[in-house]
Image (cartoon, rainbow over all chains, first blue to last red; front, side, top):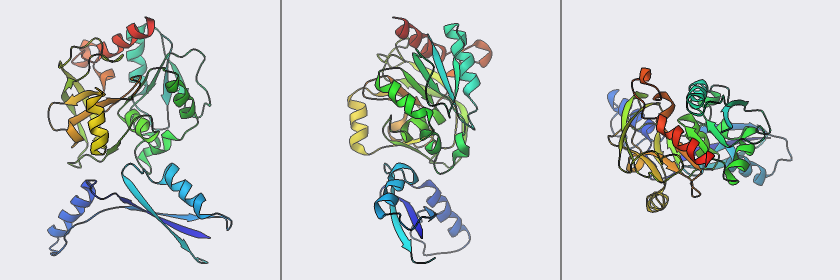
Length: 79
Length: 222
């Protein structure tokens, strides 16, 4: 069983990397980009018995820093 | 004073910190590898050095904060043993939950490496007793992720409880309220981005950092 964990900065937390990407897009001539936020995607290959709360525990204890980051878990069927 | 310096894969200021500690205390610290489950008996000071532990994988300090020795550091901190985290060590302490907030990428995105002016905000702590309150000191910084952030309530609490130990006098990395170093609520854990261990003898170009270790020695021996 595979799962994906999306880690994003909380609203209101300044994202200097997102800002730099935004500026670079503008520099390339892409107009109409209002904002850019950068995050992380972590793919987990898990034993089938792994519960949702186990994955949540992994996120809280290591994968995300919940002081500044949110996480979202997506289970993939037969990936 | 019996001190210990924790060494992670990727630490690179561990020897600087050991030299500073030996210079001030007269005793060589125990260098403790991160895989050790326990600290040497009777350690009365713990230093977490700067560097790039685990190559800054995941988040700066995130992997180091979960290594076996950190459980022993957490137990010691809870017993009141003084702990200092410098630069990457500060990042490790926030990731380990020993200090509030987080250290994010510098607002200007550049690695900042230069001496910076700091104001000693609290001269009553066991790390800063040899400084005057409001005194200006010059410590070097060398970091990419030194942008201290916490929610407003946490920042207000830190300020209100005198837990901001050092503040940048100039804009360095975008830190909230220009915070350079903070204390835990019990006052025995200090994290700071600037490097006091790099200014302990005249050949370093300054000795402003020396009094931090002298003050610590005096407190521990008292």
